[in-house]
Length: 303
Image 1 (cartoon, one colour):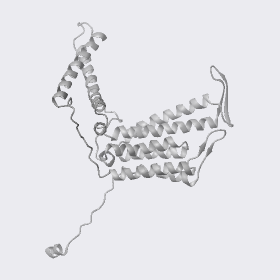
Image 2 (image 1 turned 90 degrees about the vertical axis):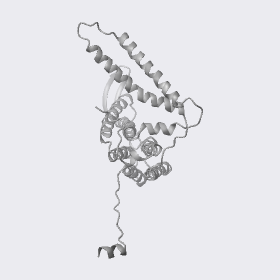
Image 3 (image 1 turned 60 degrees about the vertical axis):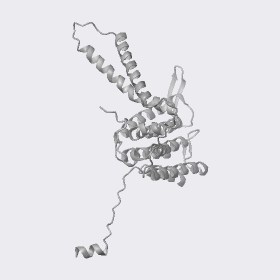
């Protein structure tokens, strides 16, 4: 069964955009989540990233990331509530614990943990959408002019590791088909045969790469073709980043957890939150109806 986080080719604006533009677009949600601690802004950034994934057809990836993010956020809230006793509003007094001493659960510690957990959840959702919607081969092709050997190594690893896993499965199945009377195959013998097959394949791959000219010093230019959707994503990313940076100077998304919880609800905070949510609608498909212009000659012909 294919993993929900694995890249799946689909026809859509986000999948059709150039990899650099897609990374810039999804990275804008991560940037907002790391610049602000306000739960309002963090929930909006997570919602925007989730809407982007749903609009791009990665609903399963968003669901997995949302479940993992909520579990991680809940764990962070619990741990932060137990190890941090700062804050004026004490909710529970749990007595003395080993290594922790006096444990007092405060509302401020829970709020601080919730802020950290929401930030992690937003980043996880954006990463899941990236994994499911951005072609890794195109990303490596984009990085090849910068780091050619690293890109080639990453490409070979991403392709040969699944092959080695399939070889291990076939060797294990072959060992089971030998029958009960055959001597069991130990781990050392199994690893030796798997390593021998991998080395043989690596020699074949090296010979193929040499024949194709990868050992030459000639510069190879592999550009990434621009997409007609790039302008849309770049404009949305630039607007969201500009609002996030401007909000730092205007006091948007203010949040204080100690000594008391204070959440800013001014207009600039809601504008930034609304922009983060609306930015998630960029991968939607917009169909424009083309109006047919009928010339006078065509009207005369039909008449």
